Image 1 (spheres, helix red, strand yellow):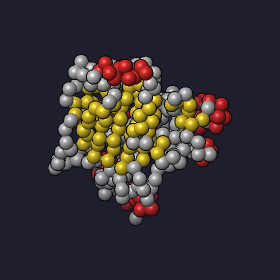
Image 2 (image 1 turned 180 degrees about the vertical axis):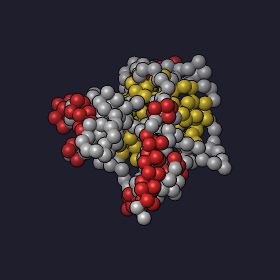
Image 3 (image 1 turned 90 degrees about the horizontal axis):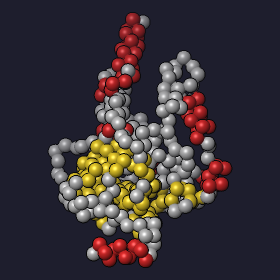
Image 4 (image 1 turned 120 degrees about the vertical axis):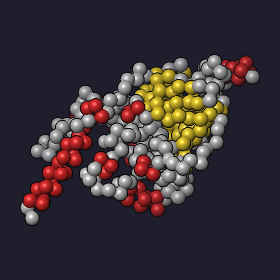
Length: 329
């Protein structure tokens, strides 16, 4: 069977339509197999890109553009970083206590390149590159931006702060993976029965059970419950049962959401990554995004709490405001 597949790859350039995304495999490329006979997608992968999730209207609906059009419409990386600094670490005013400067920011230097062209959005389906919200879904999303899932005031205690501030869950998207300002690496480790998807940001790890069913658990897990299987050259991962505290974060809008991801090696140093999100209550249709991932550097420990002085400072400031308010009565 392997010999037949190899011969097939050498004869044609295979175009797979995967839930609305298209994977163009390089001619003559044969995806390697692990020692236990499944497609080998292991390694550290970098997914930084300046391509946004949704398509900007500046591109007049075009999904793919050439390099000249990209350079004409996209801020250069130095200008992009300078703009972020001007509104963050270098922002004027007594209320600014500093933040990440340009040294930390590594968003990528170009839009995602697919099949020799540059992508204007990660979303490829719908064709307009926009999230297909229902009217009810748009209302839910707007409300979520102002809700605290713990049901407590922002600074009553640590539980009122965001999951990212508490170093519990990544504040860049890892379900699905999407580029952020920095730490855009992930690592895949495969065994015969499990796959680990390790995000660099906050070292979040999703453990995927291979050829298993979803479990009826009495609790929810961070990043949901993931199962996987192999389909052709692709590792397919399905995730459900997201934790309610994560709803409203990382593009997760419902505990009923189903996420399907596909990891396909298309070159020794390149993965094709696609994801499809389904939730009939919030979206008019399932929607799909895709991007390339490239061989990355080694992952190092993401030390969050060790240097996080913001949490006690925020809580102490809130206690001081409460004391001042009592003294003024």
